[in-house]
Image (cartoon, rainbow, N blue to C red; front, side):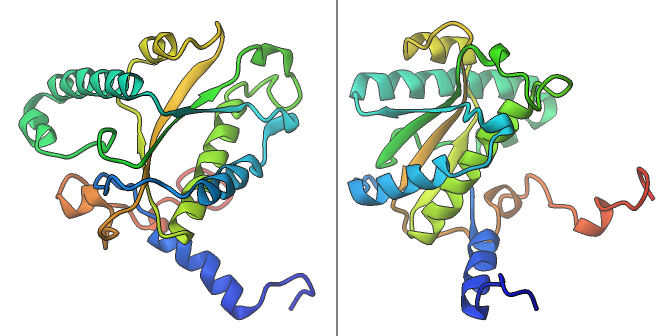
Length: 214
């Protein structure tokens, strides 16, 4: 047992929040406590990043018109996605895919501009900046669950249209609309599993040794 190990209770809390994290779509419209929001954003900011570039940028949406504009962009992409799904169109349209209008707090997470200036760790894998942003979002997601708040990651939008709506600089790129807020309950299983859309695969099918598929 290493001297750096956390206590049994602390470790269980970490694993529990990972197990019980859910991509939420149903929210109560109550505001998020500012002190809690500050903790969540600080947790996100503690994420690892390639070359310590910290490529994440957070845009808090307070203006009702901007929230309505984001909701409209999401609805447009929802319809386009449904059409692209072909025979599953009607099934997809029955799913609730976002909580933009209802959630207490709405955040847009974006990649910074001028990312080409950062070479360390990105020369052959430039997408590591996106991986870093994903780590920040996951930090926020897990911290939100520990605080008893739901979070839903919405990716149904046109990035260029959202960037224009928010006046983002050239070279930056929105990657997530995050719905954050109070919920009546957390889903016992991932919502898409509950709704029969898809089934998760076991780790045993995704873990290889010394080579692909082995």
